[in-house]
Image (cartoon, rainbow, N blue to C red):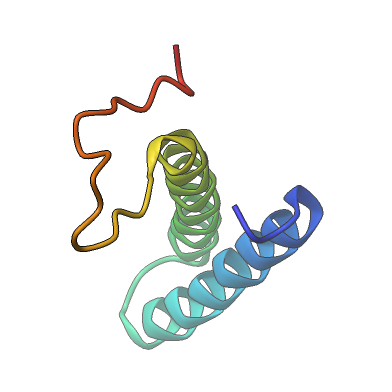
Length: 84
């Protein structure tokens, strides 16, 4: 992965805060109680952070097994065993 864990954490935090703010604005327009708006906003923020972190870990897990293959490469029979 070309991004450090600290940078990924900061990115995920900013994405989740942005999503939470958008959710808060939308829910404040709707006729709901203040407690429902606050709880829903916090849940959306936490869910966004969790999903972003899980997506980063899946990409990190998949990335080491990727290998570029050149056209006309004579070593096509080789199997990448970096994950084993």
